[in-house]
Image 1 (cartoon, rainbow, N blue to C red):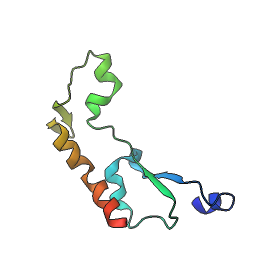
Image 2: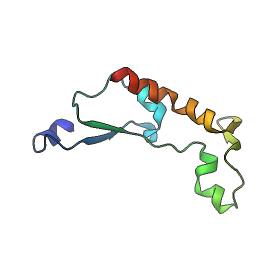
Image 3: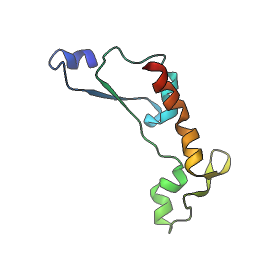
Image 4: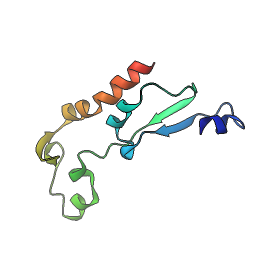
Length: 98
């Protein structure tokens, strides 16, 4: 896709996203960066989903951040440190490609 863009525009950055709803951990499946040097890698963070989803706010804010919020098969305490751990695979991937 970027090659097609570059046939008409050599300078404008192209934004790309991973699969799996562009979640940060999905990038670890990419073995290397794309060849085009003018790429912006975008991601979305929906976690903790039970907190960020509309249902939480529609139901009067059952969950609070920081706080104990469902994730996977159980509940965990979501806070700044857990968010750092959640983003860590993406940060490590970015650092490995530069």
